[in-house]
Image (cartoon, rainbow, N blue to C red):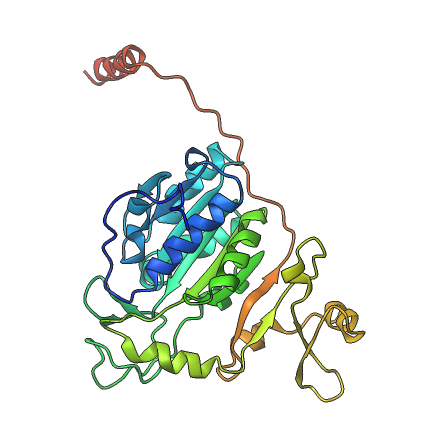
Length: 313
């Protein structure tokens, strides 16, 4: 298979076995399959292992400060609202120091796609527990095991009024590319949580999560123009038995499921019912601002500053 035009010819430096390699590969393939050119796309990142990704993509890129990627991306989105804009961030980057920016970006529904890489640990800074670390998970800062309940990035996004929420594993090749493609089609903020293992500091969590997601429900929208999505499954809560059941667009119960939208809040908050795929999407107004950028030259700026200095004296 030929190398994607979106991949730079440079050494990629992540730890062997890191899921960031898969995200880089699938994202590049998705962008190329959409017929985009490298100069059409902007990728913004914060600080963390996954935030190295813009260095390896042949696009416009911006490696920003810890937790501030979404602020920079919001500015880009407002001046170039129709440009494909992707933010790559981690659970520590977005759910700790950058949590307020994460919530407000989603609340505003700024037009961008957020890929939130969740490995439940601070990998770049050598293994401290993160806001999404699981109860009992042993880390450098919690050697006896984490005691506090973790944040759910998608639950936080739902509380902020998120208009597109998705989840997959880093090894879900077909699912990740389908979700990325659908997220890029979405008008507004789309949040794709990619759950991955950290082979250095969280080796066992991936196995426990795979077990945890053994009976995951995959949710798909009913879009006839995309065969993969149309043949998917939909989750709904039976009104009589109060049990979660799965249906398909071809079954009669699908209409009921679509009409009686399942209680996502309770579903995302249950440890034993883990879901992946397209979790939720809705149409909401996209955030726009009437921004007028003044034309500033060096001469006019110097003149303005000099006039200010004179008034001070």
